[in-house]
Length: 115
Image 1: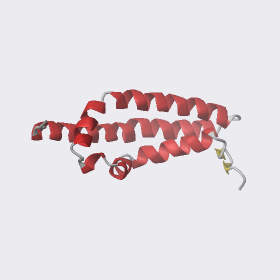
Image 2: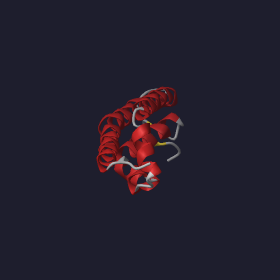
Image 3: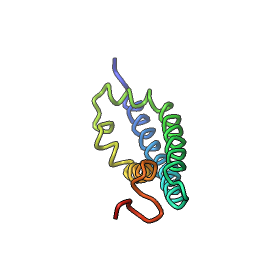
């Protein structure tokens, strides 16, 4: 099965747009939710709610991208490797990890717990 250059270019553009959405929308939401949750009296509870919400949004947004990623994966295109994907979405990864740290009680309004 041959995939046209146009389809590959569209797939790359779609995955790049997905990274932008992750960084500019979900990353900002995740970081803001993490800061907001950390400032409450029960940061783990509100962090966990926010974590679940962001996770559901992330999965919902990613579902429509699956056919395009499959095209690139089938071609073994370097654009879809783990590390290139992580580096394109680094702000989102940082924000999601921060929210996770709040949800798991590692960060609260005093900073890093235990320090």
